[in-house]
Amino acid sequence: MGKAPADSFLVVHRFMWGRLGLSGTTLLVFARIYGFCSGGGEFYESKPNTAAFLGISERTVFRAISELLARGLIEETGTRRARSGATKRYALTERALSAHDGPSPHGGGSHDKVPWRGETACHPIRKSENKHYES
Image 1 (cartoon, rainbow, N blue to C red):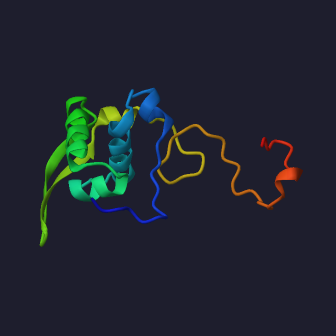
Image 2 (spheres, rainbow, N blue to C red):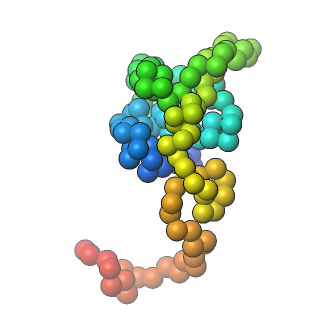
């Protein structure tokens, strides 16, 4: 199983576990799919690549996708063919999209209701100067 680049990340929104009740690897796979599809796109990453990105087995990805299909959160929309083979394409269902309501406080397709304060200045300090640091 491959590895994702060190600077890779995955956004998990509160509605995914709060409203949709997802957990564990199913939550992670949904977050990966959501990242590709939330703007109206489709997800067609191969199961081996999804598994490598998340650090899980291909079988676990298959089970998570099966669960998401059964829950009506994603739907199969066809097949994408490439030189290396074919992959199934998935899109978010209306149920998944409606669970994530309201505009994003900072744009970009996120709808979590988190107050956005923009970037803040970051100045390194010593641990001894940080009154919140517990050793």
